[in-house]
Image (cartoon, rainbow, N blue to C red):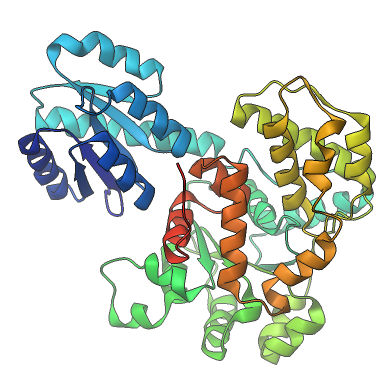
Length: 435
């Protein structure tokens, strides 16, 4: 199993145990940090996207159960294996009911430890394969969307390169996931190139050839061998990147290693034509997929509100059964300048604020009180309109963390990014977290 880029945190108040486990795990290729207390461990979890934690069940400042509970609320994607003495086996078994993936008895044998870690990651990958695309491009009602599904299905079936064009929040990433899921070989890679050089540097692998370092796009292209490469926001490619992309789109051979390229942009056709070289523009604009906005689509808004309520119930462990008609009226009458993503976040917020079985009219002021100026606000927050991208992204991250009550997994879902990218952006923009 390839352990590159996997991070493990070891928590034990016995320094000898920490150093011993760290030595073993580093030899297996893991990135390893250690902590001698729960408080120290929490600070390290806030700073790094750990994949797995090895935690002693008995710590001087807090027990393993309270720490396990905190981890699952903070970042539910982190796997936890509890370490315990023989006398605490019963407690360790109980910890698995609280969210631990496994436990291991002391004294620890290295081969048993590696086996349990491998099994934990294999189980996680199996679950991710089953649920990775569970929040797929939703099949909305209406004739407009029927035609859209035909375009997406054709793109997947014919393994075509394609540009997806749409305003912020219209579901470009979900559309790409839909295409990937429809492909014949889900075992092939799904790779994302985000045209954000600061983030790309953070995600750079430790060993790169000289040519790779000069071309992050080509590195991502090679990484996607035989699969799908999703390129975000081609409108901001420089001339060199555009030349590389043109070569990728026109010179690939249709063999088993063929890489399907799906591109996206928030910029309209006129703006895109001004930004791209003619050959690339003429190529990508043919048969491009244009995603509809949400404004005025009452049937779709009602449908989506119900869908996102089910999602929020499952994620937040709530049992809300309905939305008050007065709230529904406000939902269908609102313009939704940030489209599907804004509606999703609104329903999540409503779910968090609701204590009973029905989302009540009494919370509409909290949901819509600051939306009277939202169309103007959306323009001000749109990085394409001139605001520096880091300010826009930082505010969106802070909003997502607030909505998710600090839960990093939920916040990443709200933002439609993976959790490691979220951690990188939190560090890059110095976003304060209160958990």
